Every structure is written in C-alpha cells, then in structure tokens.
Length: 187
Image (cartoon, rainbow, N blue to C red; front, side, top):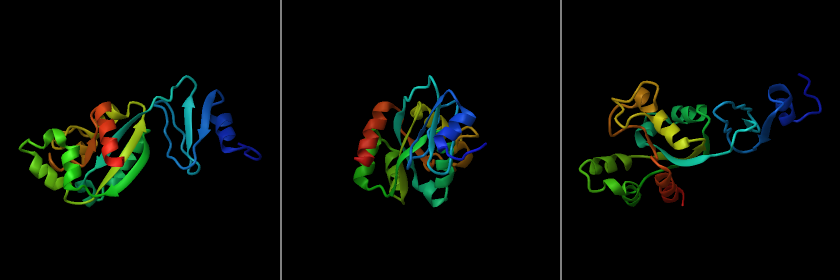
C-alpha cells in the first residue's frame, strides 16, 4: 500500500474499512467494538463499524495483593485489553483499614470479613477504572467464579487463582456498585 502523503486514519480507512469511522485518540488505549478493533503502537486507534454505538460502561477492577505478589498484573491487564476493554485510569496503592471497611461495607459484620480484610491490607494492589461495551458483565465473566478452585478454565481465577479468599481480582457487580466504588477509589 502506498502511504506517502496520507495520514494514519486515511491509510486504515482505505485499506480496512472504507465505510467505517476511524478516530485517532492519542494517549489512550484502543477500545474496539465487539466486532472489530485495529491497534497501532502510536497513536492508538479507535475503529468502529458504521452503525455501532459508543455505548460504554465504566467499572472498577482491583488487582488484589496476591496477583501483585505473584507477578500476574501484566497477565490480568492483557486479558482485559484482549477483550477490547479500555483502561481509563490505573493506580498502584495499598488499602488502609478505613478504605477496606468502606469498600466491603456489606460484609463488615460477616464472619469471613476479618481474614478478607487482613488479606486486602497485606500488600499493594492495583485499582483500575475500566470501560467498554457491557464492561461489567464482560469483566465478571472474564474473572470467573469467586472461588478460584471452582472457576471455569479460561477465566482469570480458573487459570491463575489458588484459593477462595486470595482470588486475584475484584470486579464491580452492578452499575450502582461501580459508580460507588469508582468514587471511593478515585474520588
């Protein structure tokens, strides 16, 4: 393909999708529709077929201390990105007792909470805002069952988790939870 005198968007449009919408979005990862995505090293490209909508759902994902300790952060991020999800914001941090109590407010009085809290305070974790088409159910399916020993192969927990409590990843379970958790973790 002759690329002299044309921009990246024009090159992609002429070669891959004359009837598609292509936008360059410097500084952000690629978010593709479920049907198609084109990724370049720089600038990233958003490529959607005509008729697609830009309906995007935002959610919170926590990559828990066991995943950080075991060096699985890159693997988990790669799985999210391979599903066409976009990492909007990412922070490496530790959870303090107040944040744990606020995040797990529904579980504070339950008998499993003290060991869960101890685990969540045990080391650094990665907090993410992730967006994409139906991101909440997509990420929850990708994460797998809470008990990693029972999670299906091909899921993050099914492939990588070693126990029920230390299960690598948290993903918001509803739009309401996602909104509350994003405010809690990112202000």
